[in-house]
Amino acid sequence: MTFTICAKNYLAQALTLRESFLAHNKCKFLIFLSDLADCDGLPDVIELNDNWIPNYQIMAFKYGVIEFSTSIKPFCFKKLFDEGYDKVMYLDPDIYVCGNLDIIFSYLDEKSIVLTPHRCNICHYEKNLVQEQHMSKVGIFNLGFIAVKKDEVGIKIIEWWKEKLTNKCLNDSSLGLFVDQKWIDYIPGYFPNDIHISKHLGLNVATWNLQERNIVEENGTYSVIDELQSIKYNLLFFHFSGYSPLFPDLLDKRRKNSSLTNYPSLKKLVYEYKDAEVRNNFMLYTSMQYSFNYFSNKEPIPDFVRKWYYMQQDWLQSKGNPFNSDGYFYSLLSQRGILPKDSSKTTTWAINGFKTNSTVQKLLYWVLKIGGMNFYLKVVTFMRDLGDIRYHQFLIEE
Image 1: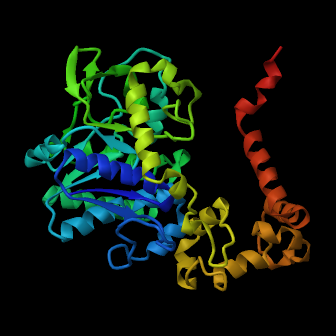
Image 2 (image 1 turned 120 degrees about the vertical axis):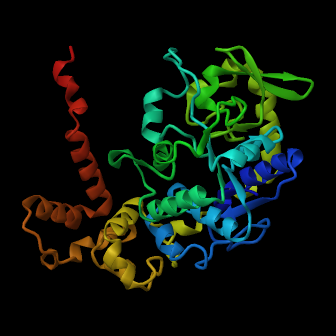
């Protein structure tokens, strides 16, 4: 069994993945929707349900879209295990399958979990698309791919992972967290005899490892050459992280140095993927709104509100559905002038409703009262930057 997870705006990528997977594999493929199926024109997907993700609305509120989509991954594994599947593989929706993946399931004959490192070889070249220190923040293994077997160790991993991601699936490097991915760095230490760390360079090819993998095409078949050891592998899947048909000549729209002019051997494969995404209604799906970005009255939920809810979730969970614009949490935000649309009303807010002994906090309350929420955020952002010693290097500049 193979599956992916996505919100509505990534359905073109998920459909392209499914199409490419089924072209080379006979295994069943499912799409789990980390969103609400609240509009027409959606393909066949597995919808969210409290029966297999208890209190998923709480998770959807306190997490952003990437955090939530990754947080439900072990719950999907558990659901498929419960339905009788013994070997389950996950692929990110922006992956493009180019070959048969039976080799992955064969690894699970002997091991409980299969992972791919971001890189497999030491590289001394400093102008890589993705630097090593970045991968130190996000984790050794790329969780765009993971395969797990339903055995004693596999079940332990999934249960432990569920527990962690229910409350700690954050994209916050200051806490040492990167969504679901950073947690898996522990697995080799916990289960050293039950893990297969794949060195197959045809798996999970992406911008972060192109410096060690040269892709060539011969008669419509793609291969990966290990530049260090001169070994040829079949290209099994390419991870198009950051790619968009709107910027067709950039491997990653977030990186200007990822132009295809620097990677001419990839142009045919990239355009093949772009055409498939367009054929799978990219322009339709990419414009769809993420349902969990809004309160029930369609007012946007600011990121800082999610963070506050996360930090106070122990008592706020008892106050009802946080998405409800007639509920306790929304009313609390409105009364205190915190929601951006209410910023103009903050002058009517009574500061003596707060109890604090901190002079700084009292000053910040007055910043909110006088300037509104948008001004408040600019002030605290400036204060954060002011505390970074790198902000003060002008003192020694000539």
